[in-house]
Length: 82
Image 1 (cartoon, rainbow, N blue to C red):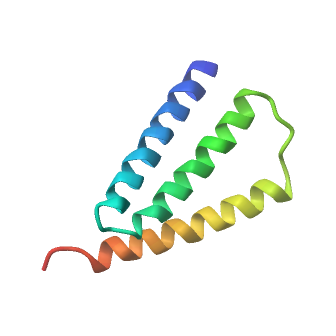
Image 2 (spheres, rainbow, N blue to C red):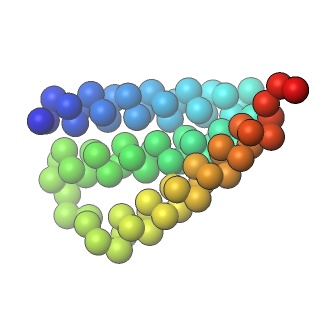
């Protein structure tokens, strides 16, 4: 189980880094995906290190991350080739 968590953290961190690179190349809405996956990294890292951060803090973080992902996906939709 811990190996899957480690793999998940690595993949989420990779998505975060790629989204930041894409945002810096002129697609600023990708920062939303970077934030979303950064939140996932933080959550999984907290689980891996057994930090006690459950409850309202994580619920608020996930709400913001979900809204951020929505804005990013909307940006991707608007930026599609026509």
